[in-house]
Amino acid sequence: MRGTGRGRPGGTETGTETGTETGTETRAETGTGTRVVIVGGGPVGHRVAERLRHHGHDGPVTLLDAEPGPAYHRVLLPSLLDGTLTPADLRLPDLPDVRLRHGVSAAGIDRRRRQVRTTEHDRVPYDTLVLATGARPHLPPVPGLRHASGWLVDGVTGLRSLADCARVRGDEIVVLGGGPLGVETAAALRRGGRNVTLVHPGPYPLDDRLDAAAGGLLTRHLAELGVRLELGRVAAGVLPGKLALDDEWLLAWDTLLCCTGVRPRTRLAAAAGLAVRTGVLVDGEGRTSDPAIRAVGDCTEPADSLFTGWEQAEAVARSLTGRRVPYGGDAWRRPVFRLRVPGLTLGVLGDGGAGAGDGAGAGAGAGAEIVTYRDPARGRYARLALDPAGRLTSAVLVGLPQALATLTQLYDTGAPLPTSRLALLLGRPAPRSGPLPALPPEAVVCRCNNVTKAALADAFAVGAREPGALADATRATTGCGSCAEEVRGLCREFAESTP
Ligand SMILES: Cc1cc2nc3c(=O)[nH]c(=O)nc-3n(C[C@H](O)[C@H](O)[C@H](O)COP(=O)(O)OP(=O)(O)OC[C@H]3O[C@@H](n4cnc5c(N)ncnc54)[C@H](O)[C@@H]3O)c2cc1C
Image 1 (spheres, rainbow, N blue to C red):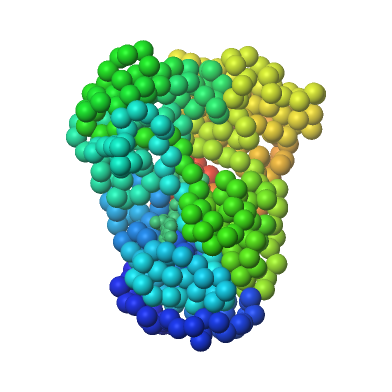
Image 2: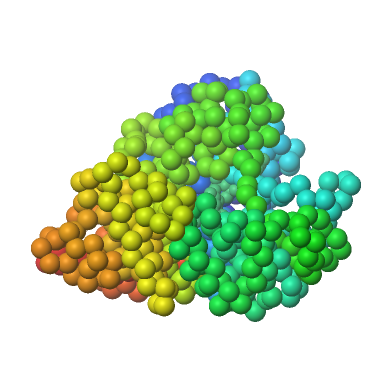
């Protein structure tokens, strides 16, 4: 992927934009001809570049990325491990009119001259710098995981990049960490035919999001896939080809995959003297402690922690192009989690049921209504918490795809549930419940590919009239597939409102 138009493309080119003269020139923070430099070409940095052009930014945009190839959907990396996708399938859309420099890192920031020093030994001047340096895997301090030099032992890796995927080899894989990444990765590797053991300190995977009933169904599904589970255990020491657990049990590994969290990459920002705590401190429009420098995505610590990287990218792009941001719409702020394990629908809306144990009522406020539905034989479970007005405040659902789609819509719009909760959970039409409220255009339907309802409507309007065509046009449903039901529903909705 190479830039066209303004600036010259290329990751190896040096010196084309260097020089203190242009670098010290002071221009308005926004406006015609403003030079924007983005450091980091992950999904959020890529998104900033795309949205800048979308909102009419006409100055040069340069994007530096340490990774050697084109930007890609990081969340879909497990699909490489089970062989369902290739790296080419993960590629993000090209960025016309952006000068892309892949394989080039920012080595330092000269804030006085407003220049970025690169690992190619050149300097790139900016009027606005956007840091999108993301996060790196955090590996636990287990004895033997690293050499004395600090380098990881061969075969030990995190999972954050294409390069990390390429490091996964051999038949025996031990995955440390039963959070979403560990679970999705373990399931993908198993589907790809490897022997997988998942080690997790909690009583069941995702125990910080699920109640015990949902956790039990997830554990059962993983075991049926053939994933071996070491629950309630932690890694105590790494030996050559073996992992010692705290009960002294030894697990053989060819690859030891640590899905044990991430930490924001803040070294560049901190070295430049920007205010950094856990992440780079930013306001709602990505401003750091230096007004000429914004930061977005996983490297940041936003004032409002519910802002996603996508929202930050949009906010920064709008702000830099002089547009105000419709920020803080309720629909944008509601946390929705869907596990990407094919064959299992599992979703959590709000804080789900963590801490609810196996009973109803825990975690719900006064006057709240708790609806619980259990059908373990069919692998189905739901626990909904509603406020006194009948609006969903949190939910955990397993094995109920249609109900998850409908409830996500109700949750996003903040509308009350139909009176027949059971009919809704079983996906049957609910008499006297009235039509569901329409999803707002900016609602993200496909969270893997960040496809909004508006994007689907646009594709429909220009001829993508059935779900398959919508998927081809927008990539919706091509990630985990858990939005397929919603996309089908929207397709029907668009068809009904089209003359
Ligand atoms: C398998 C997987 C599944 C995930 N699933 C979800 C999910 O379901 N929901 C969710 O919200 N999130 C999920 N995430 C996390 C999500 O991928 C991140 O939130 C997202 O990638 C953040 O994007 P970013 O652009 O801020 O940072 P990153 O994706 O980390 O990208 C940062 C980029 O900056 C580059 N960089 C760093 N320092 C420099 C430098 N000095 N110079 C130049 N370049 C630099 C890096 O090489 C990297 O390419 C998942 C992650 C993985 C790995």
